[in-house]
Image (cartoon, rainbow, N blue to C red; front, side, top):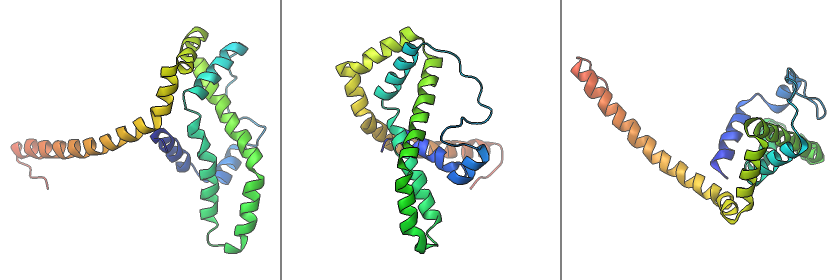
Length: 180
């Protein structure tokens, strides 16, 4: 799993539980989020390019595990009621088409975000890169690159944390304070 997915998933799981969150926001499969400003108008080509870039860049992969994580969260909440497990699993399976629509809704939101940040000409260039052999290789290697960077960052953060603590203790010692 890419680390980007882990971040997105972590943010999603930090939100209140799915049923309560949906009820609080009054979201249904066909209604937009409350207080959503009117979206700027983009040409069909601009939106198509934005969607292509978002999909071909690998960003959309991060959405693939979010919906199943909500289902897992619901199953964990129901763990104290084993008698409903079979029915709950059947309900979750029956909701898959609706959940796929929700994922597609997020893809559309992400595409609009890309359209807002990049001109049509820029998206044409970016899409060209992702269509190229180098772009395809870049997307293919993203998960492995992110995993390696996260592993490297773990060691780096430990080293820097220790370094900073040693330095802070030394500087505080110069001021007459002893830190543990």
